[in-house]
Length: 202
Image (tube, rainbow, N blue to C red; front, side, top):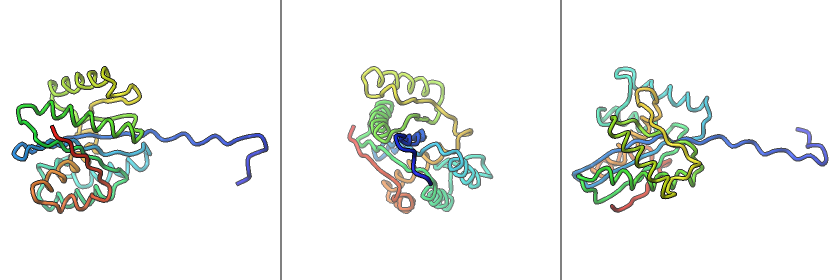
């Protein structure tokens, strides 16, 4: 490639937007609440390839849902998660009070968003819950913005897992980490090379 003409500088390439897809897992008996995120730049070809590979494992049911899968299928899912273009993060809260799960979600979301902002994430997609759950999320997000914990530079929306397979990745990450806390580390072992866990105490 020819050098730029004298007196002219080449503009740096525009960075790709980075998105995160988020889901939870709760282990009431062990007092754990986990909020996981699958994170990646918006490279359409790469993300569509990831979605296609995820759908290929969900042909029978239409979607992947960790808690509903057989053990052998969880191994396939975890193997695939370890191969996808996305990196993964999970915030694990200990000493969960089962009566205060929304508080645990808020604490985990606050920490997760802090980390995602540091990783230049511009758009967070939370797995859609029921109407009341989504309203609580929106109130939580508004509160975090008011306190400055959620900067205006980051957008947060809900997405349905029936429409967005990348949410299945966060579901699987949360499930694999939760399984490790229950004494079954084999699933987490397949994604550890691209997993960052943060542990907080409630």
